Length: 121
Image (tube, rainbow, N blue to C red; front, side, top):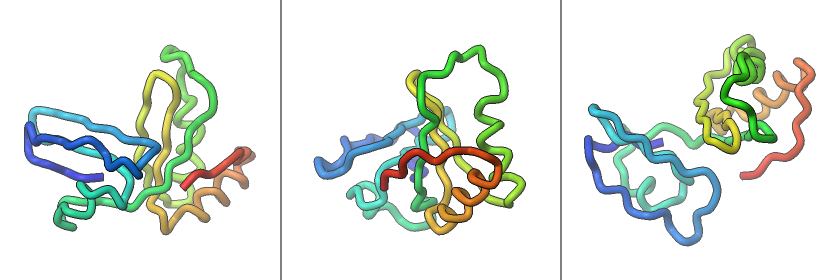
């Protein structure tokens, strides 16, 4: 994840990059979530970066009116002391965890009865 100046131009991801990408603009910043090896990430000073993260998606399209679904996946991580970054789209919810804590996150989910179907790097 990168923090860029307000209104910063964000180039398209490198052709070799695939997967989750998010660009979020607020009145105070431009944040970009992109693969750790993307040129935008590698050229940004470390003080403006966080990660790398590993991402898991919650399968299926969830109705926006459902309450507590995301909390059910985050609570086991909270109990294990694992910080998370969550992003929602129309198609799914994404939970991102620092890559160094990925095994601990999966262990926490499994202990809570969450089935891990597949992990993509």
